[in-house]
Image (tube, rainbow, N blue to C red; front, top):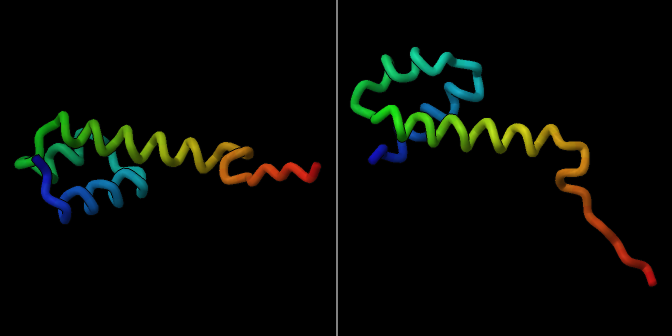
Length: 62
């Protein structure tokens, strides 16, 4: 289990483009599985932000 402070630090490092192996070496007490989970969460979130339809509000004016 990763603590909140490490999780936030890893999220920030992923957003800055840090290499996966570098993350593993910087956070030796965090399991690779936890780092992969955080990595995938951030990558998926950034893909959704790049989606031009993300965040659009649909209106029905009938």
